[in-house]
Length: 510
Image (cartoon, rainbow, N blue to C red):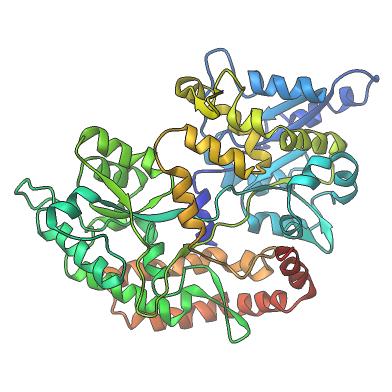
């Protein structure tokens, strides 16, 4: 659903386009060599995303220090293909129907994984993981394994999210001080700060050029305001013993009415339906925005850029806005950020599991980079060489295939990146996430109707803009139910009542 895509929208799996004149995957080209003579390095072909990374001169995805290190440690010859990320969504189904498959693909879409797992397109991995994946078994929790099971069998090695949520509120502290305002907590206090940041010349330049609150296209960066009403878009909530979708709850209507009120008063960025990441960055950097829902890492991004441009600018994290019933919070990211799957045709499943197991075993070198080169210990504290850190970011192409966060190392790593409050931000988010009560493999109706139902939410923006009256929400709810939502809700509740779901919930309490 769209709530997951908000976090992984920049991460795409890259795949082959099989057509006349295109090369076949490395797994096919090397199939004969793979099974010749003992002692030769076994070759596996994998398709993964390059995550938009670049390589130092003279290196590429198949020849660099980190891949060479992995190959040396595992004794494998790893043939990697990372086609342009733009072709992923259009070509993923093509590769699965081509009959010429690599030994492994890394996917990000739960619906895609669920579709093909149910079709028998992947190898079950239970026995292979038992034999060749000791670190995978140790570091990936039972709950995550349960989420990649179908019919009782494991069909993917999951990569975990290192964060439980993404958004938290940030505001210009210097603007608050200039206007004599305290950090807001309730929705009413937020309204007053947003009004003052829009109308009371908080930057003192005598020009009406400031934005009280900025959102993004498709209601990006709005999660805390829905949380104040106890809801989140595309999130499943338990109500009276049944699961219901947050997008159709009455509480969502109330949140839309609140945002529509801000827009009607001229307090919400007039251009928010057009704001992409780049636009929002520029407005914050240029000192136009006083308050917004930041990502946990924006303190290293647009906020840092603004402070560099305006040395007197000060920013602080705010309490989440609390609604009339005392509710607050933000959407929860899925535990799983990616799926490593092995096509049923692969003859090298054992080697793929050994490759993934090594990545899980060597978190420190692959996540942080090589010790005493990118980072080192000084007086009991991790210190990072930012130039080398940035130069070798491409290591994440491999490490992120099996992200198994280490809480202690994560804090040390984040603290070493500078005084950006990254760890503190994540802790604040963790304490305020609103749990999604559905965490099974996507149901058939999700696969069938997900795109259509997401498109229907376009009416939410029109409601905020005043193009549609707030009563249009009720029409949206009926359409959502009629065009697949009711069917999806029935399937979700079958899962909710199932023994499989009870097993997962039991593991959470261990």
